Image 1 (tube, helix red, strand yellow):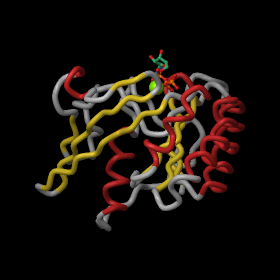
Image 2 (tube, rainbow, N blue to C red; image 1 turned 60 degrees about the horizontal axis):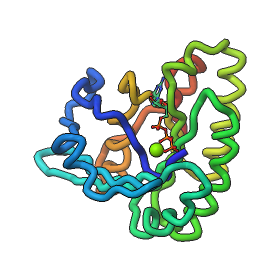
Image 3 (cartoon, rainbow, N blue to C red; image 1 turned 90 degrees about the vertical axis):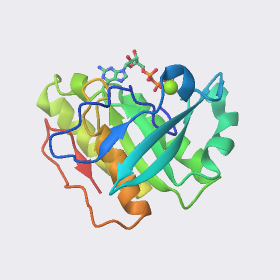
Image 4 (cartoon, rainbow, N blue to C red; image 1 turned 135 degrees about the vertical axis):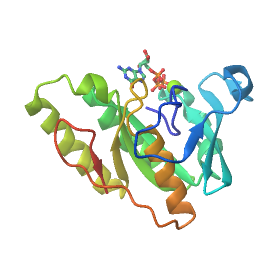
Amino acid sequence: MDLAGVFDSNEDELDGDEEEHVKYVGDEEEQNGLQMTGLNLMDKTLAVRGARIAFSIWDVAGDNQFLDHVPIACKDAVAILYMFDLTSRCTLTNVIDWYERARKWNKTAIPILIGTKFDDFAQLPLEMQWTIVNEARAYARAMKATLFFSSATHNINVNKIFKFITAKLFNLPWTVERNLTVGEPIIDF
Ligand SMILES: Nc1nc2c(ncn2[C@@H]2O[C@H](COP(=O)(O)OP(=O)(O)OP(=O)(O)O)[C@@H](O)[C@H]2O)c(=O)[nH]1
Ligand SMILES: [Mg+2]
């Protein structure tokens, strides 16, 4: 579980309906301006209507030994991304602890709950998916967070999440569509 998103840099293939150009700047080495155990800093740049928007992503590893990084990662954040593994229920349960830790430092950031590895999750029996979907939706509601199921390896909903944050931040007239169909990448708010 991470406090800020880490996504594979497989960003060139945008969803067909996305017109914004989303890409990482520089190669892997250049992105990691700051790196220490459990904390990884990355940049992501979005172009929206000719304007360039640069996000700094402070990625905290989801292990209790890295709790000390929570304040620095959260303090000035405009959004906090809580990531859990859709194929591992305990990672969802752990989100509550991370939510409380993060909220302590920042109560105004946009909360986003992200279920990762949707590609693997989609292979599970639908009843099992249904259980996780309901649980994740309940958590998202409790956190007043927007919920996205995503896959970094298959580039599902990754760009949409950043687009969503950007639209919210700048009050742009773009909204995500809810998707509550079990078996599909869920989006709920
Ligand atoms: N199938 C699948 N595997 C993924 C996906 N994203 C990440 N993984 C794999 O999941 C494992 C863990 O990925 P990480 O990105 O290190 O997970 P993390 O949450 O950042 O881990 P910590 O920083 O230790 O909290 C790696 O083996 C990745 O290759 C995905 O979208 N689909
Ligand atoms: Mg990590």
